Length: 500
Image 1 (spheres, rainbow, N blue to C red):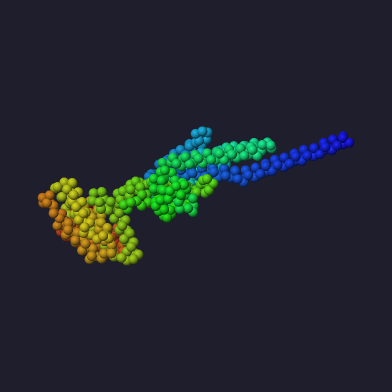
Image 2: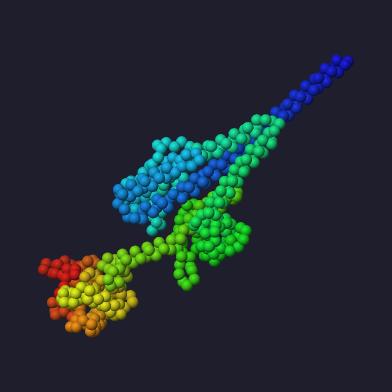
């Protein structure tokens, strides 16, 4: 009986042990299955997304350096060398702790319709031929002045960083799942370590964010205020507030003006300042995940000085350095536009071309500094005599041009005569015996080319010279056929800068 009872108890114990083993096996299998699902559905995608976001931020930081190379107007072969050097420098960037390069390969493809360069002349691939597992990060390139799309540069991020991160987390998770009795604790430790690493990564991002010397803000879509801003941004945008709600009038203005929408897009935006001035900033936007949510990292680089320099260069490109009037290139540009207006809307258009009589004698007798003074003063008087809509400029040497929109021949002649009388009556008491007069030609546009239009005014000026100087000759413009039938001896009768 006792033996049967012992056998029965032994059998029950064995069944319990088997049942307990089955329970632990099922528990272990459940934990492993749940861990595997958690890894496949959550951890690995999150790690990949985090790495892709860092790779994009790194790639976007390199794009401005490449865009600036297209601002110099260098020759294609020189520009190609600069691009190759810049791309090679990016390939040399590596992690200091591991010595592993961040980027394996870079591909540059440009839109030559926007750059006016030979097809495929600057397209290039730098780095390794193959890049298995690399994360491709395409970044749009924009021209630094015109801000039009000029090409795409694709960065192939080194997958080894992601593989190391994935392998480390996966190893910890599998190691924790190896022991059934401490599975939950080890899984928690592994998750805790992973969360701690993410927390440290986010903490490092915050430190870099705060230490940046240029303004950076974090904006959550749908909110008017800012979630976070570094010290440079607080000063630049005069931000006020506390917690995760920073606001200012400058930020409201930028938000109302429309921030860039695309990831990595850049846009020049102005901010009003007291006194009626403007500050210019290059605004860049990168989308990223921060503290578990999708946000926009917005950086601002003040380019007010650059805009001022650009404006000075732009003005210098169409301004005569001595008189301050428009130069010959700008005059022809405006004349072409006014001719287009005539052809579209048939608005009257006239041209007045004049030069100083016997200007060479003035230079010979009084010296070139006095000649320059004469040109400057004539320019000042010319500004006072013409209408606001008229375009005046130094055509070359001692020659000046006045473009008179909406003016018939008689009205243009009255303006020209007023200029002639004003200049003839100038007092040059500081230079004994000096008298300045002008001879000019006026013509009204009648549908021919710009060059023919200028030539007719020049021919009228030539007749004014031959007629005794100190006068303005106005003549109705002939048709294009008449101009083709002009006498050969009239061609080249007057040249730019000739005295007489």
